[in-house]
Image (tube, rainbow, N blue to C red; front, side, top):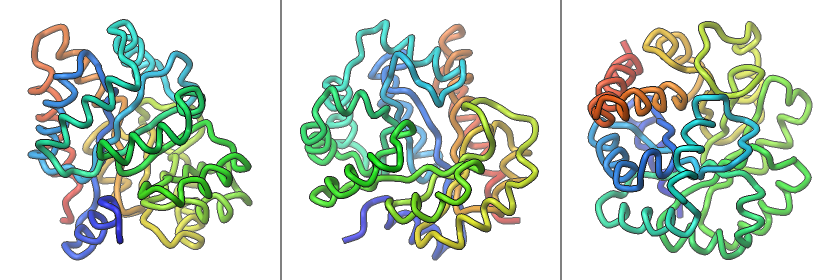
Length: 266
């Protein structure tokens, strides 16, 4: 049986549409806001929501998402109350949800316990940015017992390992647009087109581009290269501005609507 993620991409393909996947950090600034943001993003029409589990040393994340993690951690957000939040969210929504989580968090929580709670509470997939290829194989095999997608991440620097990486994953391939950490960019790697062609050559699942997508212009530029786009830091910036002015949801939803419009086929 296809996962929610797989079914969503099939639906989008039938309608000749692309996936917009916003990223938000769980508990930034609090759990109730996270729930309202996910429900509102679903109404705006996003395909999937990526939820970051706050972590004290997020190596793949730039300063914007690091600040979001710090705000959440100051509120004593932990994995157990995140699962509680997901359970409440699932009472109101069937939108595909994926966790971005660092492997140390999973390991310390207990791998089987973590996977069981993902399934129990309604998480559909995992993105683990610091999971080496060798350990990925072990986790991929372990996850065969769970209806969860282990979403592979590839970057232009992956080179000859791309084939091996994408074959150990499901849901979609998370394609990193350029070198470095997350954060808004005004330009992208000159080799992005050839990189995406190489990924598609080896992948049997949809491809999605992330890192640095921050504007309608970037969406229009990149939407033809993949099946979807992930937007993270720019969403978090809207949350930050909204915290100060009391307009978190208004900021996020207005911005996301603009991105959705830019993603439509012309």
